[in-house]
Length: 139
Image 1 (cartoon, rainbow, N blue to C red):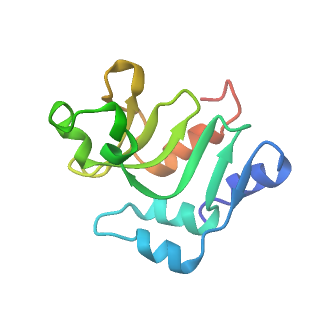
Image 2 (image 1 turned 30 degrees about the vertical axis):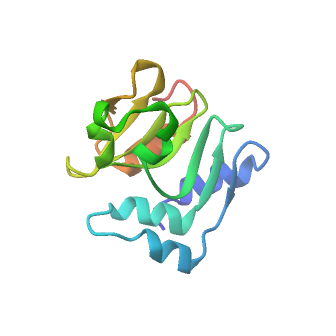
């Protein structure tokens, strides 16, 4: 399994990392053309929940960015958000997802920067997740 290390971290500190499995039926709804396999594997193996005392919340599904920020935006001002599918959010209010028009690259949407897209350093979902789960000082 791809995420055994993360599963071990969650099991070592269940009070800090609270995850629940996603049903096969729910998972099937998430599989769309182009979706990265490492993301699908994460949903299968780990599921949805929160990391590090709710520092990061993983959604159990992909969420349209323009729907997530619906009350904060005028669609015509943030046309690029229609191409982003979110998989989680940081406790600061920033969201994280895939930019589907850029080979499903990962971007953060900074709420305090006029909902601007910011690419992350990690090239894949698996790299991004491993970075989130790495102990402080190791990234």
